[in-house]
Image (cartoon, rainbow, N blue to C red; front, side):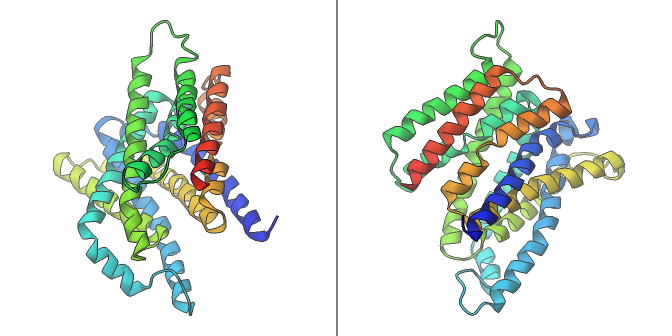
Length: 314
């Protein structure tokens, strides 16, 4: 195993922990941040991520500046790129801001395990949008395992169709997270031309999108809601803002670092087991009952992701 692969595996394994822990932190937020205050939880998560990615962006810029031959972008091209794509960046910031709000709502309703599994449908939506927009080929095997992926998700949600009275709250939560997964891939699809024109890198894009998302959400809240200083000064809330933003942002950092050392198919395969870590954390910390059907659902989803991603590479 070469050194680059080892580094990719290291960041992938660390990333699995951070991503798997995200639903647990989201569900465990202070009760003061429920209801209309979801928007504050989302805004502060985005702004903490902005603070986290700012030094990473500066390090990247400095590294590129010192490099004689680089495929990345320089400071001037970044500023010009942001200017050229101003309204597109606003749309992207709005998309990810709205998604961050519904991230909390969806997990509250679906639960940590079902929610984590539902978010893995991003691989399906990536494939679908690639076919519809980028004219990428879809193989028969990808179609088959897309059905298996959703079948595994259904097994987990319904406990293998054994619920006498179907839990409508879980279903609505799953549908919300499915919509989030779709919108996430829309946002990523919109950013791809910016990357292709080398007007920004992924780390720079995460910085600007979170800054815009946090600003839009915070501005909206201050316009339509009365100012309550307790939301900002309560120690539990402050602790949550820092932990949620750090956990969420660290997962993204590990993802991009893994991508810098590995092919996207290998990185996606490494991150596929995140529902397992979410299930473990949910059982140990939240006391969630991890059932045999959850396990079956997770296995089917992970296998489907590996097949779909590797077929896409081929």
